Amino acid sequence: MAQGSTGNVIAALASFFIPGLGQLIQGRLLIAIVMFVLAGLLWLVFMGWIIHLWSILDAALFKAS
Image 1 (tube, rainbow, N blue to C red):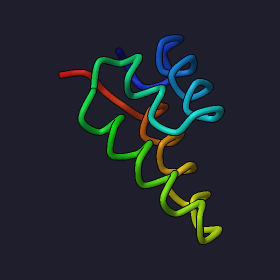
Image 2: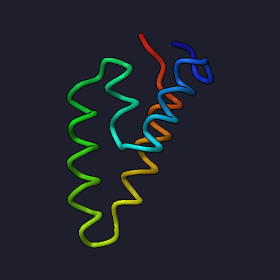
Image 3: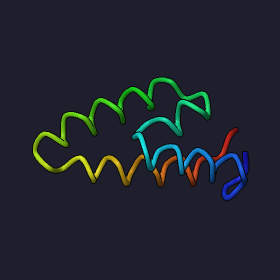
Image 4: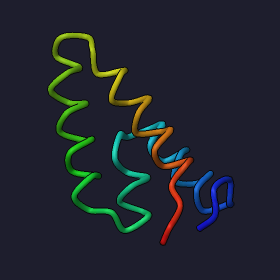
């Protein structure tokens, strides 16, 4: 997928609701798990928004090789 493609927009929207879901949609299982777990752990100390934003941006800017 090219950056800004419809697939990346959908992935970014999915990550907006659940961190890591966009990466999972893109077929990147390991980073999806990492982002989901980190966001969950950091939300316990009110810092999960950092990972949440990273997840959205990563899904939106992903370029498949």
